[in-house]
Image (cartoon, rainbow, N blue to C red):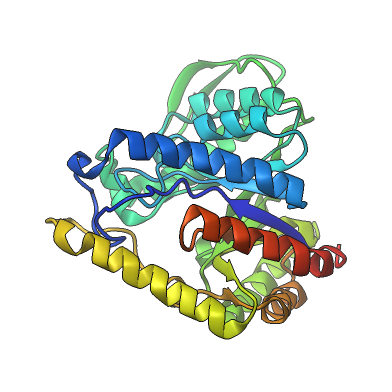
Length: 344
């Protein structure tokens, strides 16, 4: 099993809580935000040295929990600060951007990184559609058509015209081409049966986030069945799972540190509440994360996912201070990675 570190780029200072969206810019101290970004890049360099397989970035807007409105900008910085790790875009929000521009930027990143890119194209949580006033009811169709357009742009040998339901371009001719031939590995969302069917029929990998293990097992079985109907057989390398993680010496210590982290964030934000239209939806495995515990517990929980067919876990290891995060990542590297990476 491969292990990825999610570069959260969280704001390392007092800010309104997760459910508040959008968050007013007045809460963003410029120097704190800049320090937070520098710390994220330093952690990416550190996890590469520790032996992690991947570093991932994601896209979110108007909020402090992940300050990456354009994950490709952060990925470009990580590409220059690292040499070996795969850079996983998990993922760009297709309905919020021009898909041709997205095809160009990912191709450029692939060249810049030496062919280390993989990408999971996403629709985004419902609140994200309000970022640029994208019609929410159109975002699924925009995502799926956008993925098809991007993949054609990466593989076409000649300029072409695109006339779709959501996108129309008189000329598409992407330069540079991706370094990987024909293109970086592409994943689709797996958090609904419709998106699973789309990924399976188009021979994409599949990604799950914060879902219960029992549900993941059912979704992977559906994905494999639909892929077989489409004439191909996905392997473990086509399946990834993201969850919040925190490692400590014992289960009790990990739980205690997690609760202290949540309490600290709640106290910081108590005086910063504001009116909101509603943030991203929560899930049980966000409030009570799956990858929290001592090394033996974490290995067993990863083994359960591996037995379901998951080939990569993407860990949002952002609990506590910068020093606490560093210590947790070092424990993961020393006591968990050697066991789970042998399953490859």
